[in-house]
Every structure is written in C-alpha cells, then in structure tokens.
Image 1 (cartoon, helix red, strand yellow):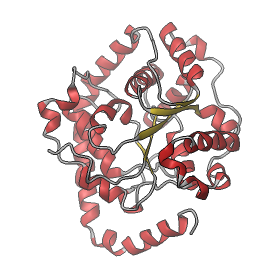
Image 2: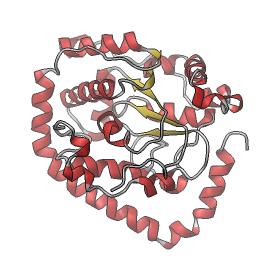
Image 3: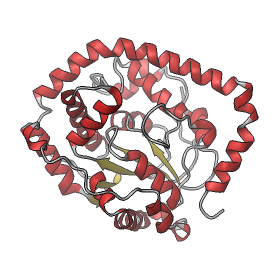
Image 4: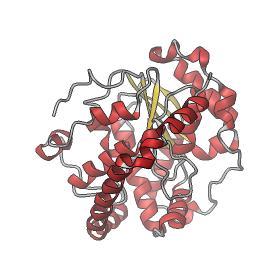
Length: 326
C-alpha cells in the first residue's frame, strides 16, 4: 500500500476530533455552513441515532472501524496500541484509503473531516493527508457524554466516562505539533455566534485558509447550532477521579487556538479507566466485529442498489443547493 499523499484531495484539510457525543457533529455542520466542503451526500448515510446529521463519511468511518478491529478493538472498546502501531505489518496490509477519500471529497477547496476515531487513528492518517493540517478539538463534560451514551446505547455511565478519558487523552497526544483550536461544546451551545466567530478568526490566521475566508458566512454557520443553556451536569465531581478532574482542567486551560498545540503534561490514565476498558474490550470486541462486517455488507449492497443509483442526481442536486454561496 502506498503512503503517498499526492493523489489525495488537496484541501486544505481541517479535521474535527473529539469523543463521541461531544458536539463534533454540530461543529462540523457549522464549519460546512461557514464554507468548508463536507463529505458528499453519496457517501453519507443516516445512522439510526439521535442526530439528524452526523456529517461523517460512512466509507471512511467503516475504514477506521476496520483499522480498530484489525488492532483488536472498536470505537467503544479501544485496543491497546503498540509502539509504532501505524506502520506494523497488519495495518500496512489495509486497503489503500485514497479512492475512498476521493469519493467522499470530490470537490476542490477547503474541506472538513469529522471522525471521533481520529482521536486514536490520526498517526495513521498523517501518512496520507496533505500538509499543512489543522484541527478542531471539541470536548464536553464527561458526565454529559456518558449520559448521552447511556440514552443512545444503554452504556453504563462508568464506561462512558472511561471512554471520555481515553479519547481526550489520546487526542491531546496525537495533536501535538498540529495547529489546533480547542473548544467546549457547552460553551458553543451557550453562544453559537461568539463561538463561530472565534473559530473563524483563528482559521483566518492559518495561511492555507486565507484565500477562501472572504466567502465565509458566520451567520450561516451560527444558525446551524441550536442555542441552549449550558448543559454541563452539576454533579460531575461526585463521579470523577482526580485524573478526570486534571484532564478537565487541562482541556479548559487549552481552549482557544494553538499554532501548534504543544505537549500537555498529564498523570497516567486512571487505573479505573484502564480496567473498565480492558474488561469492556473482552466482552464487546467480538460482537462489534460481527456488526462491522454486517455494516460493510449493507453499505456495499446500498451502493450497488438500483434505488441508490437512481436517486444519485437528486442527492447531488440537494448537495449543490445547500452549498454556501449557491
């Protein structure tokens, strides 16, 4: 498999990272309304979940799920990542992702790619994505994330908090050296316009986006976010360990733009998180691998179906109608 980025969409690229249920979909939708290309409708499938739109490329999400599966884990039971895992033999045998990326992002210009799995898999994708890269890291109260996962998946609150810790720790590790904007989802909901203007102002400071920024619409972007009161639960302190509190403090201190993001010193992952996710991995990974194979089969059948081909012009038309400036 080639590790050349020459055939990848040139972008420039903006990635949105964050734990699941942390507001990454809302932020990605806002960036799309601002003026960034999101994944094409032909490569977006509505997941049977609470979000009206996830703004994820289904092909790239399945590809990342397969990478996690090859490493012995899943999004909800992250594997142990060995040293230099991104270049080990099993990972290097993964299919070439470039055709999938080109199908997901066929249009020229700045693009935004959101996938929570990038919190773990960013080292792999750095081999393919054209430089320079920039990222937005979205974080949310750990208990709010855990409650959302419990409502959607029936996940125990303790497991949700453990996943929150590992995802955010991993994101901070892998974003070191990249231009990164860190934001809190509860604050975005409290004042969408202020949040969008702040992110856009920072993006304009990056040379790769300057030539495009005159077309950006703050109003369109802010309008996609439903303004709500701050939703941070008041009883976080009763459920969180010192390591969780430390991570919250670091994320809070990092809010804003960084050129680039530096090293974030943290104590080791809590033993509580390590034990919970290890046990979860044993019980969930095999089941998830079966679900993943079924999802891939359904995706292949969908792309081959007559109805999918016949409705492609309509989906493409709706995509053009929704694009800013058209």
